[in-house]
Image (cartoon, rainbow, N blue to C red; front, side, top):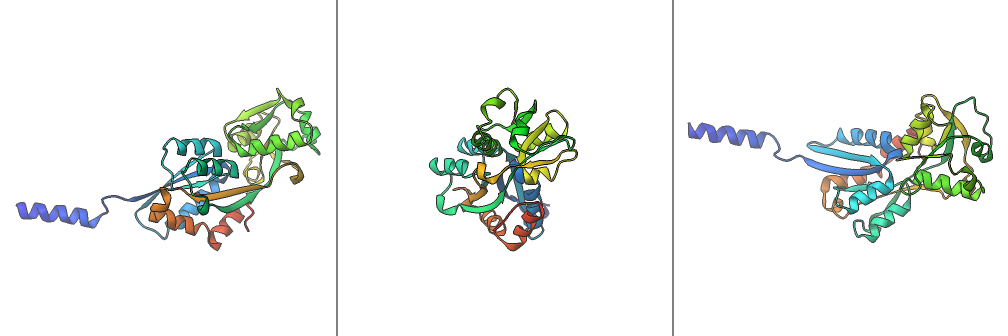
Length: 245
């Protein structure tokens, strides 16, 4: 009886993994759909690996990592929050690479007549990612200040926790429109792109990617990171409207 019990236990533990490997991802909200597909595509070629993505504003994610939240890979919507984690020694600068690029647009109801940022300033309620933590909001603030319109728009700006929430506000008609990335605008149901914000008014939108210090010690995280640099991954990003080089 004892021999049978031991045999059954050995069969159970040898027949299935005791611990599945985990890869924790902290990813800018605007990359949600693309990264979900990247995970699914890579997942077809690996076994016993669980991917745990955390999507949100780059600033919120960086602060979560700083405070101890598990993260093997961080993809930010700007360099500011990547540098923040380099300074706090959660990321090595040598591991940072450019991942993708994007552009800023203004979306809203197709009936609105919007040709310039000055037209946007004439609206009543405008959604924008909170510039304190949302890169899309920071880019929008930068563009509005460069155009000399930011001060006159105070009281009209509706702050969103991330760029996807800003899009939802506009898509539901809760605001007249929203500043979002072009890739987000392509996912809108009722809103359309009314204006492409002139690139001369804000810094180029580049998404840096890096393994964290912990992630560099996780073989499955390293494998996924390397997959994200492949031509297959580039093509998926392009399908979602991102610019890759």
